[in-house]
Length: 158
Image (tube, rainbow, N blue to C red; front, side):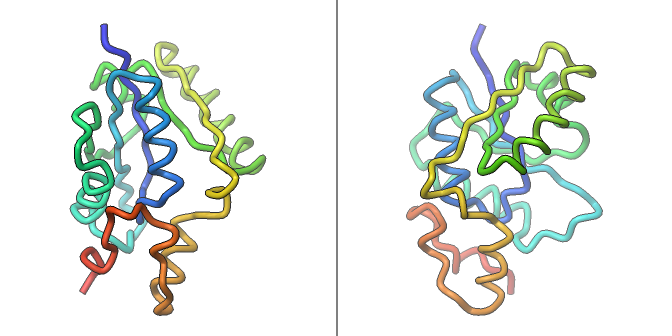
């Protein structure tokens, strides 16, 4: 049975920190599904299609990686995909407190799905999609925060 993990988030945009967690996840699992969560209450900066394309661009030759969009509970997605692992990246103690609460609830509703936390590398700990979006909206250069394969200008909303 293949070891499948889901790495879920909004990825608005997909950053170097996200790429690093995904690469490290690929070293642990047979297949990694990067799942873009859709939330009607959120208004993303980048379209779902642009975010999917960014992620695919960041992993041009990785057949074990799949990218999808979903709505609903992440644990439901895991069960539909046959994924036994939910991969989460942590930058700080604040992230840990938030993610621990969600992981404990997920464990109660889907005991077959194990949440696995990976600490971000120190050089990526300050990178957030929110900061990247803010810099972009004010006309600042953001390439240092993004995978080199991702040409952010190609994905900017018009």
